[in-house]
Length: 389
Image (cartoon, rainbow, N blue to C red; front, top):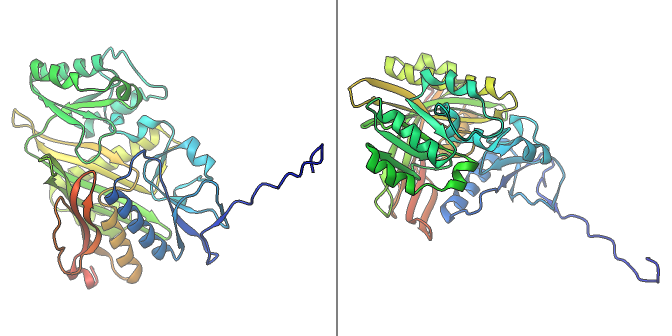
């Protein structure tokens, strides 16, 4: 009772959430400002399947004012900052499906390249040595953090006779990109850049390969399970006619990235794998506080306008992504059969309503207000029911 005889009610106890079985719970951690219906459905699908794999409860979306009996296992929709992870009690990769970085730009494409000579802008925490170390495993290009530096970077590629692809650092699924082949088209591309976004996370200006194959190389560790995979991406057309991410076909094994060499005979594919492994190691060296349980690298293989073969890492993903449903199917298969050594899985994103093939695991099928009709599903190859030895 306060002075004056006014009765003050005690603050309500935080609502208890999840973990009903006493073993733990899986929760989605939402940090993006907008989430479409198909992304929400995908998050739930991933959360429910992962909870079953770990023999945890699925606790839905993480509630900051809720009290959990045990620390949750997090599925963030973005790569987390070290400061945010610490507030949540996340200290290592065993506590989340995703990654943790010390600076926001480290989670983006910009770390793939060095700054253009004489750059006018450089974010705090930038590693000048990382871009130089990655020169051998990336395409010719630069990172830039203001419009002027983007222009200078593109012109530096023009001087080498190379067309420039300008990519927003936070673009997803092939969105937020443009190609400039000469100064007139460059001026048009620069006019569409957002100076505030550039200052915050930057942009990448790199050689535009056409035609190009994009490979997916990655590793995922969940509980006692660790898989590594090598595969390829495919594109599809969005409702507006843009070429966007359409899925991935992955060959998965037990183990880590280095274990994939034994599965590859083609020298070009082995070169793709070496690029991903070197990229992963150099980032860890440049930013010792970085850690991740999901590490996915997009690697391009193609030729430049002169006919010279080019191979290089385009970007990394240390959060759930388009290939995650396929990764989970592989983890589940390995869990069911301890003798299974390899498995083929795939994800598919179609911007129309279709009937998925027999045996498909449907992640989303419906009308999304943001992207229109969409069907998303994942497949475990039937031939892999047998032991892959």
